[in-house]
Amino acid sequence: LFRSTDRRLWAERSPRGAAQPASPTLLLHGTADGLVPHGQAERLAEHRASLGLPTRLVLYPDAPHGFCNEDTEVARRATEEIVSHVGG
Image 1 (cartoon, rainbow, N blue to C red):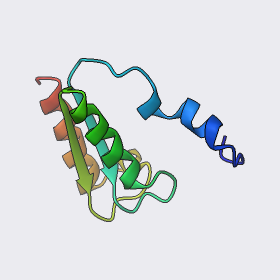
Image 2 (image 1 turned 180 degrees about the vertical axis):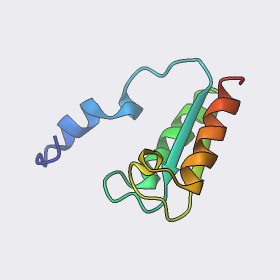
Image 3 (image 1 turned 90 degrees about the vertical axis):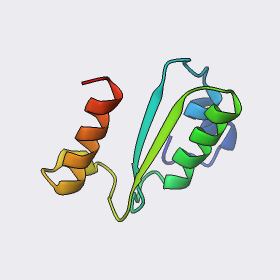
Image 4 (image 1 turned 60 degrees about the vertical axis):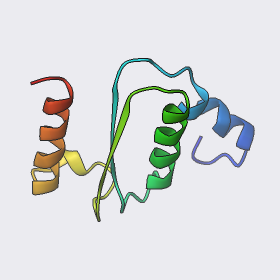
């Protein structure tokens, strides 16, 4: 998929094109993600909102892709968001 320039294939694999679950959805994204631009998370959140689906997007300034894989302050904050989201 990453080597493809076929926009049709991209659209088929995009979460935005998939059926959206009605359950409350939490999106966590770093603004320095070099693999998946944070604009994609913003567009997904906007799409879900346009469908009336409960969605929360949290952007982490300067956090890279996979920022939760390291023991950092931003990863701890994201973990707290997740625990809060699931009602912990």
